[in-house]
Picture (cartoon, rainbow, N blue to C red):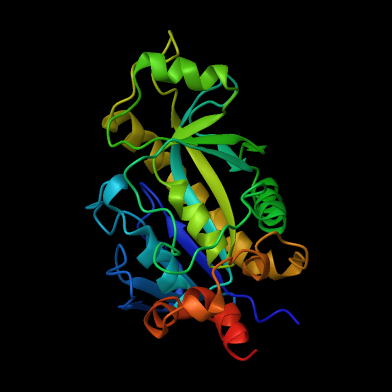
Length: 295
């Protein structure tokens, strides 16, 4: 039987708060992995309690490499979040993905190299499948919401995740285009991988802000261009989130790839798992580790 579903929103560049919610309260959450990016906004909308976390902190104080992705996902799991919508600013690698357009991402290419990418880095080893890294049901819900709001979007797309914080070189941008990637950003990895390890359903909606640096008819990307487009997109993103909150439970998640994925992922001999490590992984993998303990 599937447990009660609860939605979490992780807001990227330009999305640090959401207007129009009731019973709002910023909550501090402690984790075994350190501090999350910020306190988490607990709020109600349409009788649904949701959790909102600004990925870079309010005021945009944390660069992509320094985001504590493990603490962010653990905090969401502690609060009972089962489904996460990630809203992220990205550059476009294709002519038809113009600034202002939204992309419901279905695949990632992870080019990051300075980030811890797993919860299972001490004593206990796990290998989860990332073949299908996003949630089909959440993607369906986001698509319906964008359609209802008449927001320009593309369903499916490959997101290249670069380390940053610098933008791409022209050679890099052209390389990613040769891979047939759609958009480029700095934050959805290892976030998507960690959400999968936590058995949280995950969906990325990417907001295009620029053409990176490959397009001969557009200026090279800079922060002022990004901010200008983000300000135009912010209301669309907030309206989409409100639509998703109202309807996400109507989309069946019974066959989601995140469901119980740890059942076939943990390889370490149960006898070699210390109490300290099991405690550290309690919120992430307690369901599975406790089951093994009782055998």
